[in-house]
Amino acid sequence: MAGIVASTPGHAAKPHSSPVTDKVGATDVSLHYVQVDNVNVFYREAGSPSNPTILLLHGFPTSSFMYRKLIPMLADRYHVIAPDLPGFGFTQSPDRSQYAYTFDNLAKTIDRFTEVLKLQKYAIEVFDYGAPVGWRLAVAHPERITAIISQNGNAYDEGLSEGWSPIQKYWKDPSEANRNALSDFFKLDAIKWQYTTGVTDANIIAPETYTLDAALVARPGNADIQLDLFLDYATNVARYPEFQAYFRKYHPPLLAVWGKNDPFFLPPGAEAFKRDIPNAEVRFYDTGHFALETHVSEIGSVIHQFLDRNIPRR
Image 1 (cartoon, helix red, strand yellow):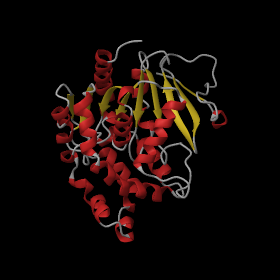
Image 2: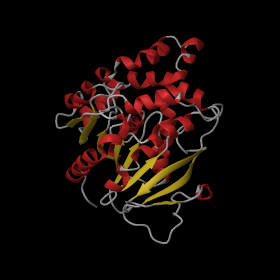
Image 3: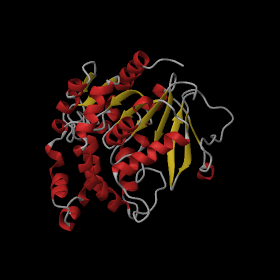
Image 4: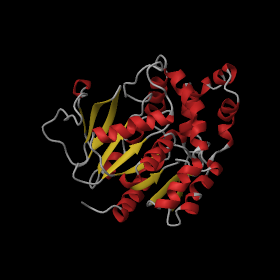
């Protein structure tokens, strides 16, 4: 099993802080902080920087912790970087009065994060919220994107389920009542539901996943950050045509690995990639939203094979 080594927040000012260890194995995961403008970004890293890079972007309500098993699976041949987005995980984020929690701003921070780490080219794996962040990176810098893996990361109207109805109601009428009505999304039972819905055996879901997510979301002030992002998600849907135009113009190698029982993002959203990228590969798994929690071995193997076929070695 891959080990974990850590650097402390005291290393944050250094663009690529060295882990506190004498030797790090090829697939060991090291933990870092790096200052990106006014955000102190926490990230996980594994693999040799001389190898092609893959940037893993998580979603709501989780963090880079969701990739804890996938990272060492890819790190034998790839340089793997998984940051926590502002407002999530262990990234140290400013107050809402000092940082606008919008997807445009999240993407700007992650864009700067890649520049601080001097990542000139990289593949992206996007999940949930990580998708609109990743799509913005791709539209802004198509020359940097070597490949895309979408794990329940949507870019099409037909991918949105009825599970979005309460949030869509908030988009149409951003009243205080509609905002407050969404607060149940942050409760432990609701977060656990996201992990277990659509899973054939809920007992295989590690309790530390939803417990950690719930604890971090419950930090003072974080609920308002998440509600700001719920409202701003409407901007992602509005930009779907722009993201789809990018797919049509550049035809990046794309693999969709999808939990087919996802209560939020439907299988037609995965199939739709083929409309704009005819060679897109689409695979479905009998699981829910957090497909890596139940099928990481199968999905990790498919991702590795996809990257091996599509990313030239340095």
